[in-house]
Image: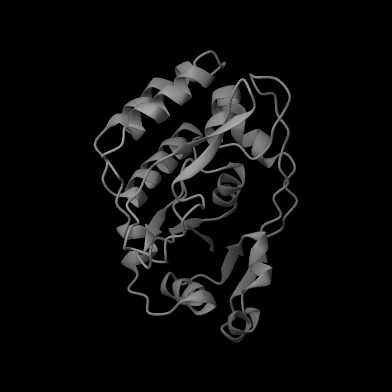
Length: 232
């Protein structure tokens, strides 16, 4: 079994789903410190003018060291209406809006208080639409004690895997020695961003999975995997 360990990002980009497609089980890394101005509460979508952020506002004042699983959405702001409006304005005329657009807007419009849970619901929505059926669990359910490379190793041991798929940047911070010592193989993601037709014209990379899905629907998985060369 090979696993990935992925933070519950907001409307994740294509590389996030490439990782999901590459493993047998996904661990949602929700028990690490929340980072402001990262991708836990925002991501990019394509617009007529280029791209824009869709943002879920969160409460951070006085909560610098809070973990992702504890982050509360700031429901004093009309964030749901803004995200729904942005999606509809920019994607309602795309080829596959009718295959999930209104369903996604309904999901966004439901009551949400916890950022991690909301993000996970969106991730699972797109996994379902892409017909990706992979088991997952939250790292916070595994009763871990460590941080950094030791935390990743501990999670691998808890779920009894011998292969861990890291993001490509993991090579800069993972202590591979401790994985070797525990007979766990670390593999680094080799994602090559595909180019695909976008409704609004000239291709812009690094958009949310929503962009690929509303433009290409069931062909998304083929597009994500056509350049895959990594060997597990």
